[in-house]
Length: 265
Image 1 (cartoon, helix red, strand yellow):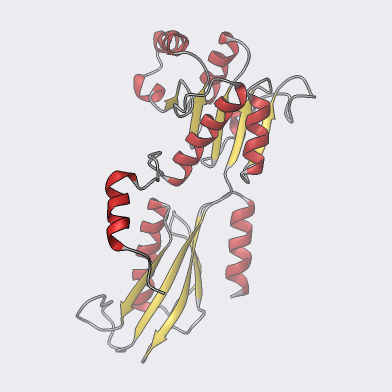
Image 2: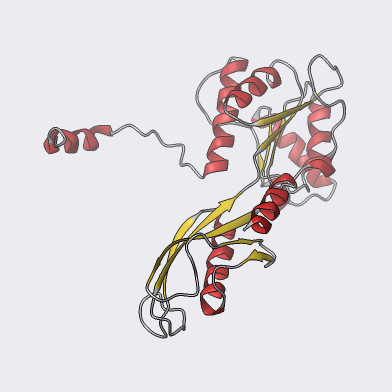
């Protein structure tokens, strides 16, 4: 178990995506024991075991799916040759395994520490994001230069510099990075002009289609702080797969609520 925990800790320190499978319930005859653990990487590497044999292969397959979807799950297996959840074993017991997808912490990289970058950085930190701001003026940023090679699949890039030219150059430098999100400030006219210029240089429409521009959800606010809220809201939506739809009950939901009456004591 120590080897598994050490491997998991090292993976997370290096911003690697990994799943931790833990046996959480055992009933009847089984080679698995409560608490058995196995770390599984997207490339198929594993450390530890959950009992071996057909059970372990099924857990590996379930972990691979969980890693692709980015969602943890509870899996149930019967150690029989046939029947629901069967894994082709004759032990006869049942095993439940929790597969926890351990994603590296999201990192926000803001290029431009001006009137938009400042409130966005403050709000993102309050929301628990790791934030870095690229700006040549040290009082406005934490990094003096942009290093595209530092961008990982867990990096959210926000381009809010002070000029059209620097926004365009920054987008050109980060567009082929593995970033989870790339957003750029600007009017629709400005965005179309930048996209047209980059396409004229040979950049494909498919590559440009990943850019969130104009950036942020349409919340209606126009002040720098309100725009920062809209940008952060869009990044949270992308990160967690939200719909951005209001969560209020609405007329139909309110009627159903009223018809159901108060909750039982």
